[in-house]
Length: 329
Image (cartoon, rainbow, N blue to C red; front, side, top):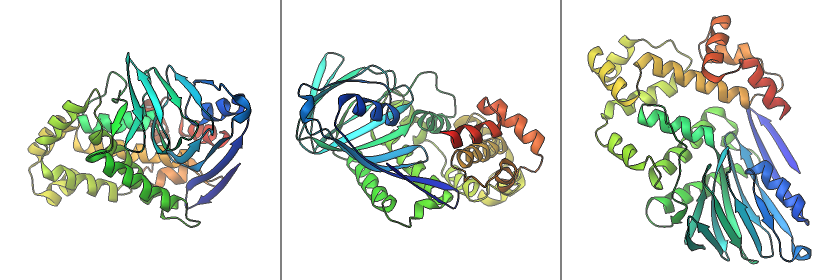
């Protein structure tokens, strides 16, 4: 059962379910995570429970089966699943090797990555689902180019260093999300939370772009971080190159050079991309009373015809289609 909370343009869905047949459990997790096979040796003992919150590009919750189960995943397709047992164990098989996942070793499931899990009968775990597109868009921005292959994380997640801090971040967000009135109901607050969750994961757990990402960030000028903050705080304003030059005290020539190096585009093109991304997020999370035109105007798009055309060029659909599709879902 879902509890829909609509406040200030963000839809926060609290969910809780108890299921007793393998078919029901498979269908539920298909909707949450993606396609998989489930084998339950003792189906009468199955007591599947899952509760948590869905918001934006993330779902954070607790899951347990209460009996031994085997899960086979060939390709999650559209999401990443990060989970960590609170107690109990699960064994993971991946590309001819295996490891045990427990309260000190988690696991990440990536699209285009096959994996088998045997989940113990006493295993109860935290699970975070993140939308594939959200991670790919963020990584492309960090690398300054479009990525050509899916992000493939190393499945084994040791709880030391950066990933331990990432799980602490998850716990903090989960506590805030469970409150009746949450800061996450404010769109600007949640978008920053979500960005922190995704960005810190990309920098914390090894993946096929990890070395390139670290090398790129090592020589990145500090003023670019200042401009990113300025951009995100000024999405509704018509910023110009003169504004950027004055804000960070660098020449126009250097602005162009560094933005092409680290983002693959001009400063104003990058700012415009951020505005379109934020409009799309708002459309996905829009309340029933909101209109495309009012959301577009919130981010400085005054010429609606031109905005709709460019939106379709970027995302492959009209803004009205995005709004209608996600309201239907």
